[in-house]
Length: 277
Image (cartoon, rainbow, N blue to C red; front, side, top):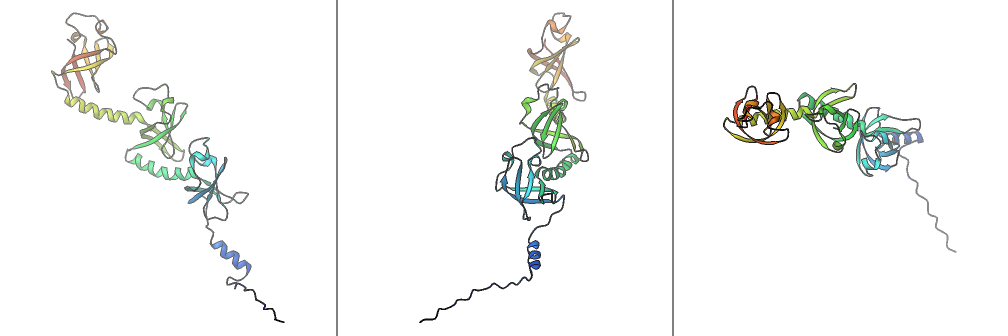
């Protein structure tokens, strides 16, 4: 009878030590975070109310949907996708359920403030997309929520703001207060700068004796103003017609296209005199 061969099971050598030592070693592999830290993670799950982020912590980090974007009431699927690398700010190291609570929009906010402050210091220009129409103006996404008052959108007051929604616009920073989370923008200031540069260039090319086409922009008691395509020139009532007239409206009307001769150009006062005769 052949004796059965008994095979001994191999036992792994515990080179860590006690159970307490093992738990301590595992703890060392887990990242440590503090409130206010900026961290990076990978999106592993998207729900309607929250997004889960793998950040190397003992549990996934949680970004509530309200903390995803500076836009209100966004669908999480429109902001992030599974597998995306996301930067977030630690709001709470552990909530009552032991979860790490994060904010994507506040991380974006912190980054954006530094950039916006530099632009303000250099009197530069910011570019952003209009994300909301609110009472009195527009909200522009410049990395944070910038408020653009209705009176500062164009050179003239705009009544219907709806067409601006979704548009990318450039603007100057008028006010900046981080403590009050207040950013006020002005597109009109930028347009005025551009218009001033265009006006100066236009006036430099304008010479007495030139014949130009224009449009009657307004009528006053002493004559009519003609928009020459960058500069308004005045046609005095005495230069409107060879006949004696009482008022400019006897000869021209607002919006009418006219051909005029340049009589004089005063560069220092930016004044142009024209003749329709």
